[in-house]
Each structure stands twice: as structure tokens, then as C-alpha cells.
Image (cartoon, rainbow, N blue to C red; front, side, top):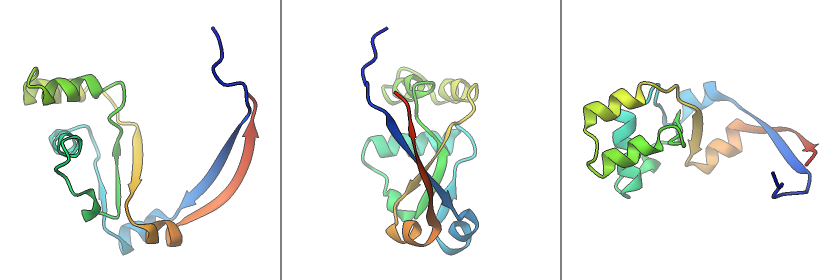
Length: 118
């Protein structure tokens, strides 16, 4: 197997004050890959959702484990019920989407930076 990148990398570590986010900002969390999550993802992919109605959105990533299901549902190749059954087989890998710079300025703190070998 050939390596694509030969350089060392850098990892930046941050802390986020989630209690402050939850109490001071418009925070929304998807707990599962469910109908609400699926409709949100589909709407975003079609350019129909204003994600800026929230300052922070937390939830499952539409990654390679579930994207085929999302795309099949969007193409009407899979019913909602079948899509939800498929999605229920997976535990979400969480991500944070921050849409408000004030959240970063007031709730995110740089902790450290370190190098990793290639």
C-alpha cells in the first residue's frame, strides 16, 4: 500500500463549555438516526433547511455507514420505513455544527497542539 501523504501532521485540541452552550445559545441535539434526523439531512442536502436557526447542532454524521441509505431514500429507491430500519442498525458518530461565531469566541478554548508522525 502506497502512502499518499509523507508529512507529519498536527493535532489541535480544544475544549467546549457545553453547559454554557446549552443554556446561553440555541442548541439542538439529534440523539439517534431517526426520522427527524433523516428529514433534516435530506432537507439540508436539497438546500431547504436554514441550519442557522440553531447556534449549535449536535448529532450523527451522514458518513459512509449510512449515506447509501440516505441517498436511496432521497432517490425514492427506499421507503421511509425501510430507511429508518436501516438507520436504526447504526450508532451515530457525533459531530458538532457551530453556526454562530459567538459560540466559538465564548465557549471554545484552545488546549494544546501536538505533532503526529507520518
